[in-house]
Length: 66
Image (tube, rainbow, N blue to C red):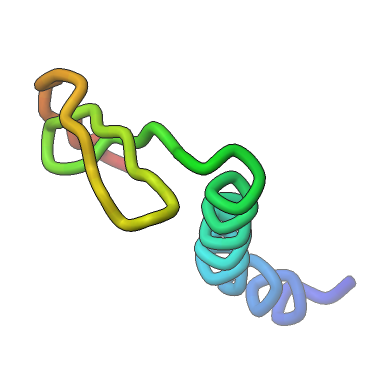
């Protein structure tokens, strides 16, 4: 595989991850009726009907230098 091809494929990784996470969230809401997720330094439970319940506040994410 050529370097150019490898770089193009690697550039797709963030998009593929976004799609996979979105599908997993939808599937979890459809089968379990809720998901637990971290948003804005809060641990929340989101329900299939759109309601959200705060579980607790959590530490803000730590930036990682690459």
